[in-house]
Image 1 (tube, rainbow, N blue to C red):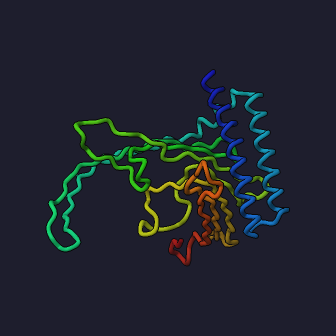
Image 2: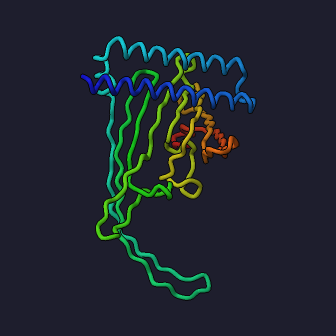
Image 3: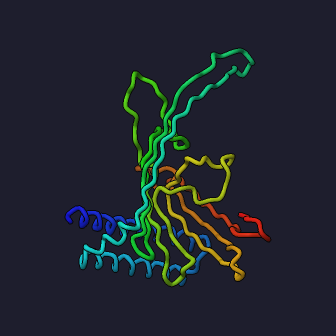
Length: 244
């Protein structure tokens, strides 16, 4: 029971941190003219109300934690790969080919805490200096392989606007793309706003995704670099064919 109480209180603390990130994104969206001040106030008021409700629930009845534990889905995978690379210098001269064996391991979970709050995390092998790969090479006389925090997020679905949600943390790439644009192993860090517009015929939905991502935090400089991104699209069917 103590472990259950500790876990639930941890979620409450993380929710408070998430709320501060929501404040920051909403402020940016108002500055860019995407949201009006009235819409921003409504969103922030609901987020604050939800945070208070979650804290009250944690204090009132810790036994209810079993409900969202049942909604938890654990996921993981492991991959072994042998690579052979034929290489040449830029001037065309020969370089010895490269052969190596690599391993990738990932494990995590996603859970639905209640009708409006979702959370999850994933750990993975890899190199902290290479965010686009979780592979580890067999080398260095059988040394141990590093495990890193690959994903950790909170997602909040608004009750007043059911098709609107916020997601924050180290998240999967929220933008529809191919590996030619973004690596499938890259997990950006920041917060996103997603809104869907269902089609009346129930054949699909239009969507818009906006995001604010921290690129570099400098302790001695207040002008930290960041990235803003927006994408509009359609996900559904055209005729009998799936289309995105």
